Amino acid sequence: MRLFGAMVVVIVCGFIGFYGTVILTLSRSAEFYLIYTPIVILGFIIISILGIYDQLKKKGMKRIAIGFLTLAFCTVAGFEGYQYYVKSLEVVSTQDVDLSQYRPFVRNSKVVTLNEASTFKIKEDLPTLDGATALYPVYAGFVQAVYPKKVYSLDESEVVSTQTGYAFERLVKGEVDMVFMAKPSEEQMDFARLQGVELALTPIGREAFVFFVHKDNPVEELSVREIQGIYSGKIANWKEVGGKDKEIRAFQRPEGSGSQSALVNFMGDTSLMNPPAKDIVSGMGGIIREISNYQNRPNAIGFSFRHFSEEMVQNGEIKNVAINGVLPTKENIQNETYPIVANFYAITASSKNPHLEEFIQWMQSKQGQEIVERSGYVPVE
Image 1 (tube, helix red, strand yellow):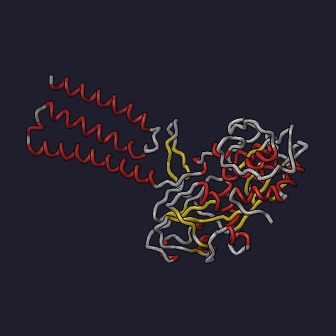
Image 2 (image 1 turned 180 degrees about the vertical axis):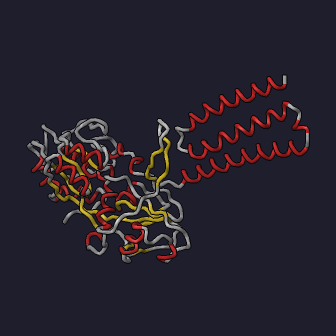
């Protein structure tokens, strides 16, 4: 009977362990559990068999079994506790912004409304618009001033925001008439040329490119050279730039995003180091590398555009770093003392929409630039 009981334990635990391992391969914590689960299952089988053969009545064996189970529990509790801590550090990403609060013609919307009637209106053949998440409030303001009043769904309408990379692809493929974004990367420009598409970039506003750290980080300012050193990997410890003796964790964004393209432009001829990443087990069992979202650890540094980091996210746990001793305020952007300022653009391609030229001219007019400024950005002029 004891042999039969031992065999049942092995079969049942093996079955549970096998299917548990399969399920855990789809987990973002798979690296830990793929090692932890087989060890715990094997230990539980051994303890169970020892119990069947009355070996746990011996003090030594009993203490070993209790010690193993206690260690197994403490290990998983410690791991999950750390995961909870890490998750609590995450700063809201652009994907987490609720753009519905900026939709045009919606009651209590945060979108900017002119105090007078627009000097330009479009009643039919509405240009289709797409763009960066952070710029949606700006072009939603244009729409509220110029387009006819109706429902503009974020998912499927003339005015959507599918984020920079995909919005640019849609423009090149002729799926939209105009996109709003920072200057395209060289890879994006090459993609357009390969498709035989000629782009027209019209600056409609300006914005500071900012770097931020944890609010408790003692570093208040960095030079352009120091930031380039950090993101090239030449500067790896905060003590090298006046901070604590801690390794710098320099986060990046996915390739093709507006802020990542701005970082590449900022780095110039200096090569970027590989970004912090995590291994993710795919559904087919393969391991892929995924760029980590910014996590607000005391040793972290990240980047974005000023309006997003200060106004759209409003996260009190980060602080912008002064660059060359100058903070990225609206005044310092306008007087050009802040050293990292970039235009953002209304970009068109091969669209035949009859209203595009006049629409862009209106964006550069006093009314259009008022919307840019009141949306939190800096006018071109």
